[in-house]
Length: 123
Image (tube, rainbow, N blue to C red; front, top):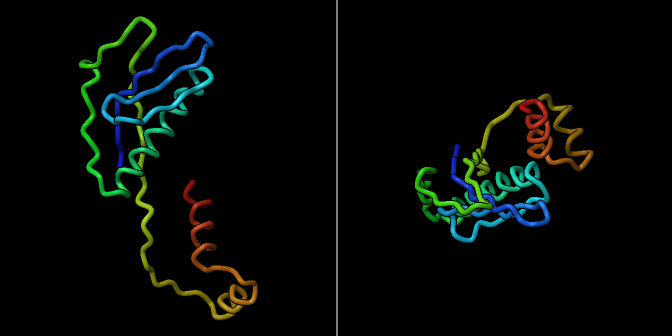
């Protein structure tokens, strides 16, 4: 699921930025420079929304960017977070018997091997 929220970036005297989200009380991050701050803003938003979702807390609606007041050393930017549902699902798979035996012999988790293989294919 995709979430887009306005983030407030405050420029600090040392060139770093402090990032807050007006709609997500307590969601704060910092970046050493603007590029790093943009990355940190996305990471903070993703983790915050994942936490709210996992905790079964209602994710608030984002404020319209036009309704956010800024001071002289601040600006607002929209930040996007794509949240993936990490819940496990059961699937039936077929594989050759010899392959299943090798997995067992090597002490591997078939689920982990399948997840790793699919992750590398889907990136």
